[in-house]
Amino acid sequence: MPLPLPPLFAAWRQSLRAGYAWKSLRGDLSAGLTVGIIAIPLAMALAIAVGVAPQHGLYTVLVAAPLIALCGGSRFNVSGPTAAFVVILLPITQQFGLGGLLLCTLMAGLILIALGLLRAGRLIEFIPYPVTLGFTAGIGIVIATLQLKDLFGLSLAAQPHNYVEQLSLLLHSLPSLQVGDSLVAVVCLAVLVLWPRWVPRVPGHLAALAVGAGLALLLERAGLPVATLGERFSYHLDGIEYPGIPPFLPSLAWPWQLSGADGQPLQLSFELIRQLLAPAFAIAMLGAIESLLCAVVADGMTGSKHDPNGELIGQGIGNLVAPFFGGITATAAIARSAANVRAGACSPLAAIIHAGVVLIAILYLAPLFSYLPMAALAALLLIVAWNMSEARHVQHTLRIAPRSDVLVLLTCLILTVLFDMVLAVGVGLLLAAGLFIKRMSDLTDTAALPKHFHHALSDLPEHVLVYAIRGPLFFGAAEKALSVLRRLSPGVQVVIVDISAVPLLDMTALAALANVLRDYRAQGVGLVLSGPTAQVRLQLRRAGIQRVDGQLAYVRDLPQARVKALRWAGGSKT
Image (cartoon, rainbow, N blue to C red; front, side, top):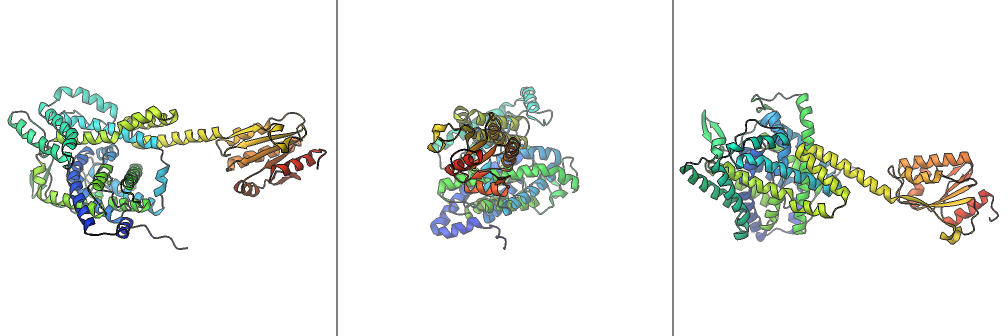
């Protein structure tokens, strides 16, 4: 049987089947321009947040976004750097430098392609909502805390590696607060909050950065210094250092030949790959979750249907190629994809156009970016962190959800903040799975049926007992349900068990049932399993549970079970 072809270009095929006309092209042009304007400051701010120069965020959009749009499975997803990755990527940058970050992104791309080829797109649906909400809210808190340094112009004596140290260092650094940076941050936050209410058609990011840059120039003239992107970052050309970001396209370079945390080129080795494998897997999992959630949101807004496996392959190709051109990790962003839909996008061409806008900005507007205040970029990420934390959804969930779901949510949130997202998701999934197994086991019970329960039981003699098992018999419930059958009164010769309400058995249940049969055989007691479903009957037959020393282990219906039970027990009725 030939293997199915990889679901490449699924989004493009959907767009063409839906019909593409001049009106669709106009919608894609409008959406691409709008989202491109939004993406420029966000890409730079997010690159800075993960510890690399701002141009690497723009390179990510320039390379990864069109590749993902071309090869992926969602017509409306717009990919690029996202805030969700900050908590994973920043420690990688601190430990392995830019080269390690790009190599880790490349490895994550390979994992995403493998997930897509293995048709694992639907597996993301098995991640419980409290787990997703918990770690996204935790990420929002961490990102917001990371922005406090630039928001108030604080001077930190060291770079902390955990949240508690970070808070402590920020509190000790409060005396270094800069009035100019703080004023810019407050004004930019006000614009970001109020602008969408006044002028919703113009992106608030653009207005906030323009107002922040103008205010920074005025404060500089008034003697209040404001840290700018040009003061923090620079590039070299022909041996001369220039402020800001380079106004030219990235060149091809092997990620492992770039500098590590110590400033020296990385040495590609098995040990380095082993150390990066766990964070690469975390990046791939988070990228898969983010991109597929984003695709679901876009589908809900447009009535379309994405191809999850095609989207994973597209995301993998984008993250595989982007590191060779200085691009960091990319995935679909819900805010940009939603803006893409609202602006009239009809196909993946909008995401490609948005990358073209970033290309124009790199080539012609790069010198202007030097004047952007760091406090304004921090304010922009603070709003992103607030939106990502979904505080209203968290509050609503805490109020209405079962206690077990609340426990999962709070556990994921706290572990994400205090430790890392990988641990939070792992513990959250284990906790959610354990609680689910507990709930399912509570649904399974074994009860004795009185003689008046059914007319078929009314004339059974006293040495025949009848039980009913309701619910699935699996490893979490089998022993509890079947242990009731072991407690027999003296004189009992036949036990009838109605299993018509048992939808499934697993190997643990079959083993436990075999032990019950063995005990009954030693005691000379007959066991009759009545009313099994076709699937359960097949499982019992495969397990060899049919006849034990001439005793019928199960029959098809309860009346027949009664007759057989009486015959074996020596009753008068036949």
